Length: 198
Image (cartoon, rainbow, N blue to C red; front, side, top):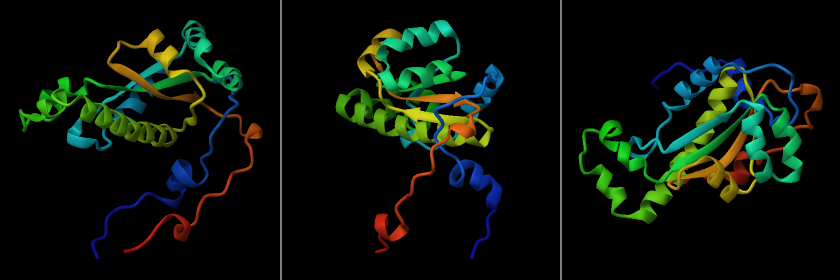
């Protein structure tokens, strides 16, 4: 059997087994440099035809957060306003305009999507969501805690922050979580409940 390097048990705990969703935050800043590192890890995750449709807006200032406030569900306001950073994870419906750079070995690739708006939308949402998952894992691997969430008005967020071709997917608060405010960890389905071997 081919032996490849694996992450240590401690690393797997940080990324998966002991990581939890945070809703309360310590008063510790997150640097712009760390946010750049976060994106520079996220971008290496695989996407269809290397399409990379995710667009991420990092809200770091009180003014930016106030622009978001009217779109938030009531139970998400306080946790978001207190988080050092709130990322809006979005996807670009015109991602294919970047394919000459991202997928240069097939010049026909942009036409696959520009000629089919429904395929472009499905591809953008699916792969942008994948990149959102990579984003959470990358953040945890860099020592940040995450509070991903729905509970907001997508149309209001899109109108406030994005051009028409970019659509919000989900929000993710970032920072250093207050572990004393964590809820008990919820269970997960066992292998036999969620998987089949055929």
